[in-house]
Image (cartoon, rainbow, N blue to C red; front, side, top):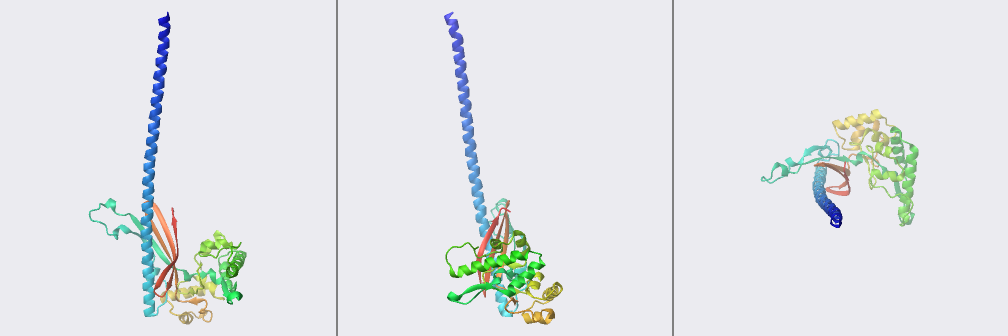
Length: 334
């Protein structure tokens, strides 16, 4: 009986051992699978990071090259204007947008490379004359020097922006509040180097939101308004009809369209040419607020590289043959 009793116990013990061994084997397999999955994920992640970094570097090189190309065009345009006395207008090479083009057809590739190794990148862009728009920073001007210096509102420019706001059906209270905030900020910047509660001086159109201008208003203003670091004139050869009407008191949209039609036929070399061809603007144009040449331009580049789209905007200023970058910003993931 004793031997028979021990047999079931030994059987049960052997079963438990086999069960424990099976469980241990399953745990080992699970652990190995988990470690293998983690290793594969790490490898995939490293490859993705390397791919993204390579894309970023390639995009930077291409967009920098596109910016330098635009600067070269603007410099050659300035050289031509110096020699011919021509003005800046929308019929010049810099004003022609670049439609999306495949870069691989222009890049020099090793003949031993296969087609799969050629960079698949598509570039488009344009150059915009920012003096075709009313300069928001013209709204303030500094009078006096030294300790007596102070910032005040430029009434003619405030009237121009008021007319533009009325054309676009935007709230005038918003403009008034933004100008007051800008004057306060500018006055403090003249006399107080310490941080203050006022907004920073805007450098781009989007920064006007700091002064209380809403996103809807910014979208409506963008084709007609720019933020430039110094007082500028409005180029009547490139300005929109809305900007022209806003800048000239008493002018209506039909007369502004007449001005646009005449400049398309023959761009104005001087303000006197515009006054002669469009009598409605005679006596309204002034060298203080209007001109036929531009110094500030925005260069926009758009690169489509594999599945990524990267955009870049740059403000460039042209002083004779010197074309320099004032700021650059990159927009990715669109």
